[in-house]
Length: 120
Image 1 (cartoon, one colour):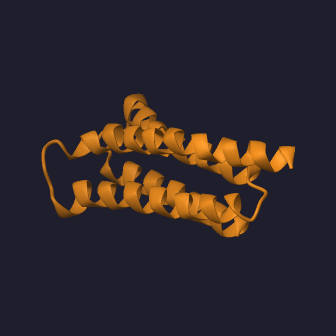
Image 2 (image 1 turned 90 degrees about the vertical axis):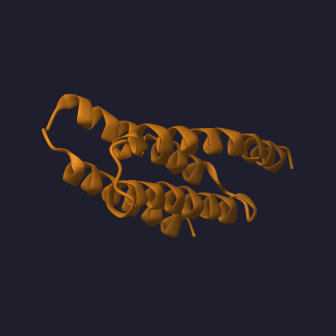
């Protein structure tokens, strides 16, 4: 299951980078910074996948990888290709922020489960 989680994260990063490069008009360092910010939650998610070891945390990180990737990519695709708007580029600021909030909120039960697992 860990390989599937890593695959989902990797595909989400790849698609986010491709969409970001496709949506850049002038190639600039600022735009690349926004793309790096957009893929940053997947780094934390990969760390969570690496540390998951039990029968509870491995499926939990898989579910978290699926929901984070679908939420992030869904909103980015929706803002940039489906519902075109002048503020569509703001999706590269807002979506990673909410992904970070969700992942940081999910760290609490994850570390509690890891702590319980190490003490047992």
